[in-house]
Every structure is written in C-alpha cells, then in structure tokens.
Image (tube, rainbow over all chains, first blue to last red; front, top):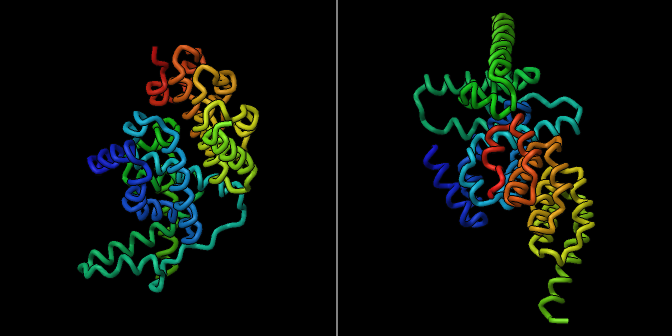
Length: 192
Length: 126
C-alpha cells in the first residue's frame, strides 16, 4: 500500500487531472467505511466521501509539487474526511438514522458475493455489527477507536492526525473500547 | 488592446463574478484561476476571499495571493497562520515558505509549536 501510495503521489505531482481518478478508485471504499463508522448513516457517509475528494482535489491543485510528493496520502484523506464530518455535524444538528446492516443493505451486498468460507462471512458480519455500534460512540472516542482499531493506524499516527497528544488518544481508545464492550454486553444479554 | 489580453480580462471578469457563487467548489476554482492570471487580477476581491466562510476557498486564495511573488500581501498571509482550519494554516505556511526572504521567520517558528511536520516543510528557502 505504501509503495502504491508513493507511486500514485508521483503521478499526481506530474499530472493531477490525469491521475486523480486513481485516488478515488484506491481510497473510496476505505473512506466510505470509515465515514460510515463516524456517521452511522450510508447517505451521509457517501456525501462526506464525495466532498472529501472534492476538497482533496482542490488542495492538491494548490499544493507545491514537493508537498504532494511528501504527503501521507491515506492519513491526509482521513484528516480531510474528519474535517468534512465535523463541519457537517456542526451544520446539521439532527441525529443520524442508524446504519443499515440488514441483509438487504446494498452496502453489505457487495461484500457477501465472494463465496468465502462461512467463518469468514461470519467474521465480517460481526465486524459490520461492531461498526454499527462504533457509530453510536460519543466523540472523541469514536474517532480514536475508528482510526486505531478499525483503520489500524498506530496511536502515534492517530495522535498526529487528530493533533492530540498520544496519551489522550490512548485514553480515548481505551474508554471507547470499554464503552463498546459494555454496550455489546448489554445487547447480547437482551438477545438471550 | 491586444486580443489575448482582452480574452484574459473577460476570463477574469467571469471568475470574479463566480466568487459570489453559493457553491464553495466553484468559488475555490474561481480563486485558483484568478491566481493564475497574476497581477491582472485585482487584489481586493482576493483579499475579500481570504475571509470566505469555506476553508478550501481560503486555502486556495492564499495560494493565489502567493503567486504574486514580491507583491504578495505577506501581512495577510501571516494572519492566515492562525486560521482555525489546518488546511488554511498549512497553505499559509507553504506559501510563506516559498516566498523566502520576504516572509519573516518568526510566525513560522510559532507554527513549530503546533505542527513540526508542517514547519519542516514550510521553512523559508534562503
């Protein structure tokens, strides 16, 4: 991924219009899932990702070539996504409709056509269920858990991205996971 | 008037009008194109765009102003180092860095306290 990102940055630095489509192809799914975990709503997530790419394009158009080459593309895109999410959250106060993780959900349809073994499908379903609950976590726990636990960024990378001390991120991840565990435990007890 | 300049003026008029568009993406594109026209673009509308409510428009404006080189309004660019948006602060740092000797080092040193990576890239080239 890192090499792919470096190659892509080199292409963007020489011909932004010719290669920006590749940025969308490579990162749109990842950003969509990330945004889904933040919003818990598929339509909001799609809008956020679309705006993220528009803002990324505008920024790249204005960046010096040397800056484009030194970008950490994925983290940078997460950072813009979070910006868009926060700005929208400020503008739109009403709560989101919970993420649709039902069998009919078009978002899950894409994932379930792989003919994977049952264990893998089950693991995925569990992950989707978890993602649904992550979207209900209060900020700033949600951002920290989303980035560290699901996007697998290191605590240091998350700290840099959120412009927070590593200790704060660590605490937020810890509290976020605790809350998540408690919520899931209650949920499992209700199912029984 | 030369036909090419005439054409450029009409481009500038078109995009100056677009600065009032309700869509931030259109305004950011307008600012970018106006910046490309150099000093044929009047300074005032760009200075006004520095106060745009949208961060991408403000960031694009900084870049457009920076393209004026020795005529860039350095003081206004320095103010943008304190913008609430990181996208705007970064663009201000990058632009001031590129302006080299014209930009005082002190505001960039202040930025060092908030973002080491941004500072390292944006330090003025002497």
